[in-house]
Image 1 (cartoon, helix red, strand yellow):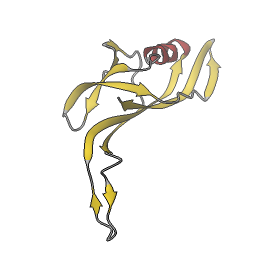
Image 2 (cartoon, rainbow, N blue to C red):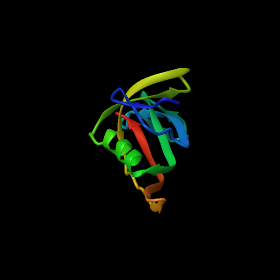
Image 3 (tube, rainbow, N blue to C red):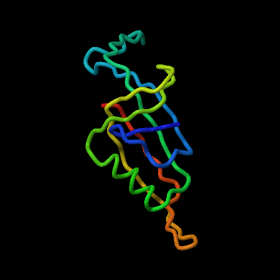
Image 4 (cartoon, one colour):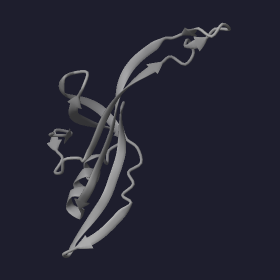
Length: 119
């Protein structure tokens, strides 16, 4: 799988990758009636991507985090609905990197995980 941010491939393939299609409804016109029926006004369908890596070197994690440093960026990824790769404008949520360890003089980061959401 070849993921790209702003046209540049990420150096490491993720160990976890999940695409969710999200319906965005108009907050004012989407309501339930007194008999429980939903009047829904869907305005858009967007993608949310959950992504994670088991272990990354300091160089790899820096490349991933630097690539997603801007408020918004173009992300190219495989999409189940499109049946292939698509590019969408995304933003990233919190990016915790919970565990660091050193092996043979190389610093590794374990379990980097975050969620990308279409703009």
